[in-house]
Image (cartoon, rainbow, N blue to C red; front, side):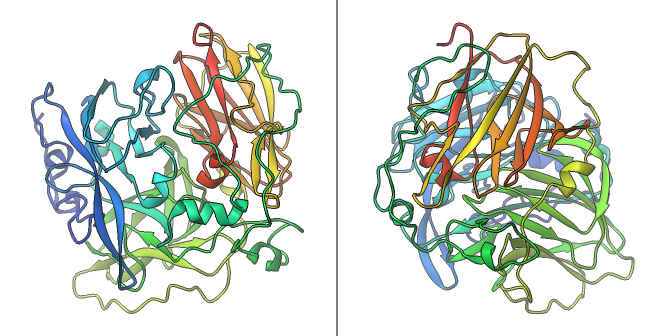
Length: 510
């Protein structure tokens, strides 16, 4: 394919692996692939690395190519053809979040899908879904130790656009062993291993879940969770919790605002931010500061442009934001503010010669709770085809901070009743939040359209992860077009680890 490149179509991108660049400053075509032969698989390795955060070293994980590039970028038409080697020192499995592969390639352990043993490899080959996505562990608490990386699949339109791409992967970071951190919340109570999918009793197929006692052990009062939600009068609901854990740092491309990544951009140029919230249990407000941007895609799916300079982003979600930089240049922080708190992280876009000032890791005032203002304003460019529902259901989001135990319909994973669907059905599902925390709900193997909020129907965005606020309901619709046994869970890893997961099971996969 012959392509023409302008200066703006150079990627001066993110550093996710120590000081090595995530993607080198190369034309887009070159970024996609070391293998130019379509039959040659990409090689990715899960391994350990040493990361310095606030002057202190920590051993974390990485998912990277042989040249040190974290994650993967594919150009239009390239298949997701990958050989994944596990050199992490322990078993793992990697979920390709946002992709819709065949069931056995999704990256979740069950009786049909074994974990990848340390020293072993696994191969994947399927048609890639375009958009900004990511890859992360679905084994134990490895995701908290930064076993995650970007997964970008470009379209022909992306290649034609005269704009610079900037990928930003957000994390919350702890020096502590994640198991100790979770034990502090649960009082040492046993938690589920979300790497191993169970085979609980089957539902009747109506997708109506009866309320039963959940199986999670009772927990002691949580240690170290943020009380900021209670202090945000006028910004949160009485009794609402916004954060489970006080983290040591918040990272944007593995760096804090003590030493942020500074990306060189062109005066008057256009930039496409590809933002990924890879945090374990932290939602963010994306603050563009002096810039105004347009949200043009969410969770990899294009939306009608929405203009603003502050946008909410829950765990697991992605935003693509188009910016036009001022002709006179300057330095422009792109910040991620922790929900309900003052901590923040981010990167800086700077034109040549611009002075880059020091930024504090604390904002002048604490942010409020994420809401669905952005969600209500989103309209899919390619919505689902209109058709009546074949199957409707309701899932209650249940659990509490004290005891620290989370569930769906009062059933923890392992005592759950999987929801039965048949191939070809249009499914409409309503999430009802009966807990005191918001929950980002993620469905594997499918993308759904948001079709209602708090009982009011509308034609919203196509997503794979949607935030359900306290006391709120969100209705989604999707077509059962990918047979298998698919997890449906909260993308707060600590909530999932204590039971907030169920399964969507197709006929023949019981």
